[in-house]
Length: 286
Image 1: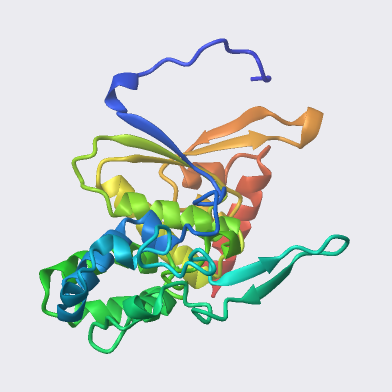
Image 2: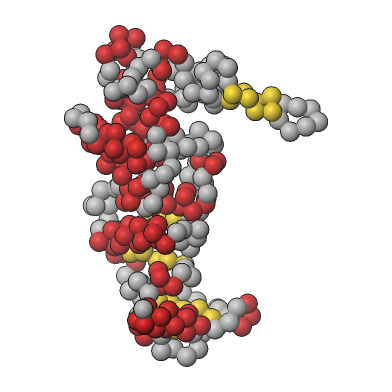
């Protein structure tokens, strides 16, 4: 049907408790946001460091291990790790803070160590390194930290550092961090509708497999996943496909097909079905 043919959408809306658009916008508005704060794992990490003997002697609380507030952050750079020098007719010059050497915390805070690692060392770890580090420790809080950051590895972000600034993350990485957040939520969060806009953009085939396992985990938890996608490997794994076309621009916008991927292959007007069939034939001949 042409665009605008329908005026309303009806259905069992009450069965959906919430709708989440998981887009590729940054996970935070400032450079201070990072994966470990977005997943709320940094709260537990700061609590762990506040429980160390030397921290107790200094009277440090969990807030002292944050670079966002006074007390534990380096006041010279305000916890940024860098000093910005404004140039009147040129681009600003950014220099590493000489006081904290780019570590963002004051000296006393960096003296607090857990199994030889200070808070800066933890933030510099990749997700996979952090999982290996915390999973071998006996404290219950370490188990909580591992459980919160493991979804990042599950969505193919094991290489990202815990404290990596959100401003350095790609759109696809930000999108998968949001997915990891929802994967870590409780199973009794209701039946949600998740909408993803081309989540496989820029992903290697191996990482696409990880992503699909994560999306399937959402479905297994009782949620519904809607993908806007062009990747044939993803399309053939879908339970239901709505193919738009048949062409682009003014010659498109119509529903060419809706049904299973197996039936889509037989739709003569669908370019998606054509290439999906060719891909299936190649794999069958291999």
